[in-house]
Length: 164
Image 1 (cartoon, rainbow, N blue to C red):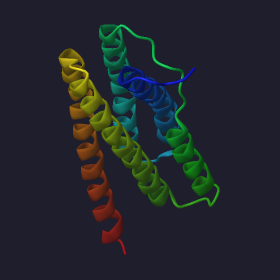
Image 2: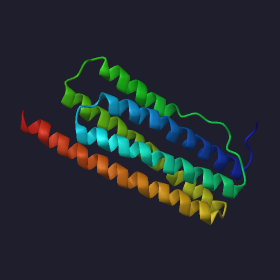
Image 3: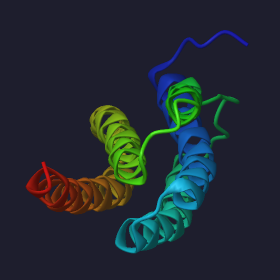
Image 4: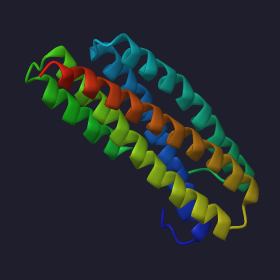
């Protein structure tokens, strides 16, 4: 189906992000199963729960716009998962595995942050103020979660490099 309107672009972006949020649940579960640090595993579990909230918010926005998103996939999340799987084949030490898993999660957060900025801009241009607020809420969660992940990364870096 040809995509010819700004609303169509907006719906496509939301569909893509909804697919990315759903794919990220699988990514986070996979990472959680492979890490050794308990705090990191708990963080991944918390982030997995937060994804449903974000998917619900996207659906609320789509309902407000009165449209169905175009079917979309999430190749960026698939790429991060493949990158992690290739790295895991090198049988890294547990601490190194944890840091790499954390890096993958941070990269995924920043991809989402960029996507939400774009969707918010489109919602503003379409005068969809309720969507702006809903999407901004998701963006705020992503930014807070990125900060949490970065603080944990800093802590793990300090612990690892203290032994070197």
